[in-house]
Length: 73
Image (cartoon, rainbow, N blue to C red; front, side, top):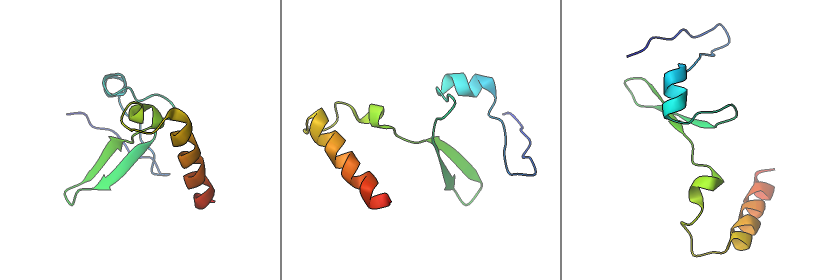
């Protein structure tokens, strides 16, 4: 177990050993989950994690993601 401090702005530092273990580099997106007992930070799936998991071609997936992004705006 490791203890970290939350700053006035609500920020904290993930210890280097855990960043290395879970490949958390600058810019990595994390999901924040309220477990009822505390807060869980989980690495969010990226598009690279999805490669090879679909029957669609890369171009079809890219167009689909572009459509989703346009809807979010």
